[in-house]
Structure formats: structure tokens, C-alpha cells
Length: 628
Image 1 (cartoon, rainbow, N blue to C red):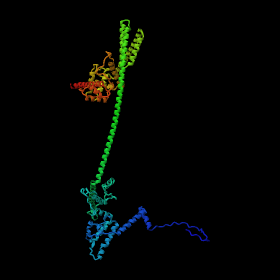
Image 2 (cartoon, rainbow, N blue to C red):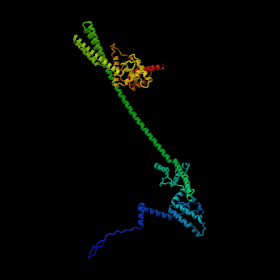
Image 3 (cartoon, rainbow, N blue to C red):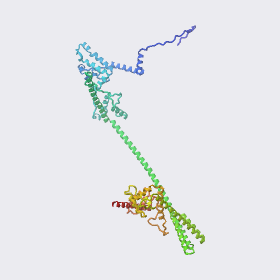
Image 4 (cartoon, rainbow, N blue to C red):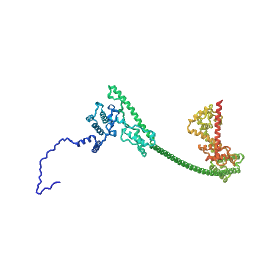
């Protein structure tokens, strides 16, 4: 704070020239600068140095409070046997041992020198042994060993007061922690790493226990046994002897190191086998795995049950839908049957009406020959209309017949004759057209046969009947059948009506030629064979109009759908379940095969029997030929 100017004082400002700045080199000195250099070189902060200074002060205070223990046998020690002496006890540090700091060791040595130096004792009138025979040499050797970090570590490794014993299983079985905790704690001093974990208690977590055994199973010990070397290489007289001594010492150290590691491994293995926490953890893990396994099994079981319920629901829905469709189909079939019967009766009535009308008019003839010819035409017309009715052309046949009868009833005799002749011409034209189509189909099949090479059979060609029969036999006797082609040839010879005997070679050649055909040509052959079969079975006129159906097959019409694999299995199982002696056998078998009637089951059974008989006959014939 500036002093106020007195009244009347005048402020004067001097404006002299200011001198230029000058750079001067200054050499820093002092204890603060020394502390700064130490921190910079060691890369530490000021607070860290303060902690070190506090530690040094605490060590100095400890040195001041250092209490040395008297060693009663000090004066009796033999300096020549210095290797077997306890250097810590010689300096009075037996109670501190490896925990003693270098300052404490130096302070202890200083105190021992002041007390046991030969000059001090000699001045006190004590008798002194001349040379290295005095026990003071042991004090000198002790400070020499303990002040050198390498030599001190070597001596600490074979500390005579260290207990190397490992508790047995019997000792640690009942009181594990009391027996093994001190052992691990005293052996932890050999670890190359700091902060070795402790054994812990029964309440320790799994992570702590696992970490403890992981550290000890990978324990790195700094303990070495160079102090026990029997020979000193410095006393060797030559280089070879020194090398030999080094070799012997290395071998002895390696042996002792191996024994030490085995001792530690035995300690850890024994502790691990007796540790109650390990058993507890294993039991907990086993229980956890069992619970997980049980939970998975329960989840899987529930999933299976859910799937089974869903599947059963689908099956029930499918069954109900199938039953509904079958019921509807049954009703439709019954209704169609009723309508068919009604229409059939109506057609029969119209046909009878046509015959009666023509008969009343003497078949529109003036003489007997014309009447007979017209009667034949009328019968042909009735038969044609009946055939159309049998192949489900009811609407066409009924309408034609009804219109014809109406024309005859309303017209004159001449008009009726013209109408009948016109209808006969239409029928004849249809028959001719069908005949021409059949001729063309046969010609197409013949062309296919010629294109395929004709086959064997002594130079005889294959007709329309043999080709479908060959295709059927190839499917009936698949690959793997014993003497397959001989069996197929015999099957064809048994069922063919051509009278041509085919050999296995003929069958093989023809089968190879058929494989080269296009699928359309094969379908054409099968189609023609089916048309021929249908014509032969459908064109047979009924001899009695009012024929009564057989009692055995009375009932619902046969199901023309092909048998599925599932239906075949159900039929075979039902045949096994209900033998021949079972009453009402076929009714029960039909009930076991949904969607199939008694007639369907009997028909399928006969087909299977015929198929098996045909296969056996063909195979037996081949077998008899091979035996001959």
C-alpha cells in the first residue's frame, strides 16, 4: 500500500535511458535442486520422494530401536566351519532373519564390532587368538554374506531354521485350515511374485479358491542351492578343474531344485485333495449340471408332448375331414346310384316302347325280308343305346331314344320309318368311325414295333398284346430277382395268347429297345392295351335285362382308385389279425382299411394271390430248368 503524499509535495519523473538486458548463466545449487534432479532421473513425483524420505526416517527410527539378541555360542564358533553357522544369530538378528533390512544388518554389525573386536577385548585384558582362528572372523564372514544380496539370497534359500515339512493327509483331514494355512504362508516367501494369495477360510468364494490353487500350481520359486556347493571353483588350480567343479555344482543344484519343486507340488496336491471347499464346489457343480440336465429333459419332454398333441390334433382333424368327405362321397354315390337306377329304368322303358312301336307297324316293311332287316336295325340301335348307357353316356342315349319315340308316336308310319332309318345311319356312322380309329391305332402300334427293331423270338415280331405284357412283367419282377430275365420270359410264355415262345435273350433285347423309346410312345402302348381290355369287358351285351346282382358283391360300388402304400399295409395287417376261421372276416378287414369296402378288399386279395402265384410259377419253372 502506497503512502499518501504530503501536502505541497511534488512528484518528479526522471526519464533517463534504460540499460539493455543482459543474459547471465547461473549454476543451480542446493539441496532442493539435488532433490529435483533425483526426481527427474527416477521419473517420480515430489509426493513419492516425500514418502521415501518418510520410510528412511522410519527405518532410522527402527535402527535406533533395534534390539540385538545375544548368541551364547558365539565365542565357541570355529571360523573354518563358517558355512554351517547361522549368520543371523552371529549378528544378533536371529529373531528377524530374512526380514531384516540392510541398515539393520549394518547397525547390528557395528554393534558387534564395538563389542567383540579383538582390540577392544585385548584392551580389556582378554586373551586373543592370533590370526584367523579368533571367533571375530565369524562376525566378519556373517556381514560379508548378509551384505551381498546374491550371497544373502543363497543363504536364505537354505535357512537352517526353515521348516520344509509337508503335513500328511491324516494330519489335515479333520483340521484342514489349521494344518495347511501356516505351511502355505511360510512357503510363500519363496515366490518370485509378490502378493501370494492366502489359503482363506471355508467361506471363501470359488474365484478366490480357484485363484489360490492356480497360483500355487504355477508357483515360481526363487529358491536356489548354490550355498550348499561342496566345491568352490575359486580354489581350482586350472581352468579344466574349474569347469569340472561348475558342472558338479550345477548338477547338484538341479537335483535339489527338482526335489524342492516336487515338495511344493506334493503340498499343493495334498491340500487340493483334502480341501473341503473343493468337494463342496464339485458337489454344487454336479447338482447344477443335474438340475440343468433335468430342466433340459423336462423342456424336451414338454416339447415332445406339445408336438404329439399338435400331431394328434392334426390327425383328428384329418380323420374328421376324411370321414366328412367319405360321408359326403357316400351320399353323392347313393344319390347318383338312385338317379342311375331311375334313368336306367326310364331307358329300358323307352327301349321297350321303341320295340313295341316298331313291332306294331310290322317294322315298317311290306314284305318279310324288309321287316327282318328293319328288325335287325332296331335291335342294333337298341344294343348301341344300351352300350352307350353302360359306358356312362346316359344323357345322350336317353335323349336320343326319347326323341325317337316321340317322333314315332306323333308321326305316320312313313315318317317313323324315316326317323328310325336316320337314327340307324347315325349309329352306323359312329361304329364306322370307331372302327377306323381302332385301325389307325393298331397301325400306330405296328409302326412303333417296327421302329423298335421287332425283337427276337426266331425273327418273329412282337404284337400289340406282348408289349404291355412285357412292361408288366418287368415291373412285376424288379432288379435283384433271381434269374430275372428267365423268369420274365416264362411269365410271358404262360400268359401270352400269341403262341410264340420267348427266350431270356429275346426279352433282354426287347427291353433295351423299349428303353430307347420316348415316354409318349410307351404311354401309347399302355393306352391301347387298356382300351382293348375295356372294349372286351364292356362290349359284352347283357342277356337278361332284369338280372339280379350277385349276393356276394351286393352293396356299394367298388372303389376304382389305386391302392396306396398305407392302405396295402393296413390290408396285410388285417389279413394277419383276422385269420380264415374268423366269423364275418371280410367285414372286419374292410372296417380296418378306411375308405375301402368289402368288395375292394376281396378284389385286391385276389389280385395279390394271382400275382404271387404267377411269380412263383415263373420262378419254379426257371429253377426246374436250371436243375436239369
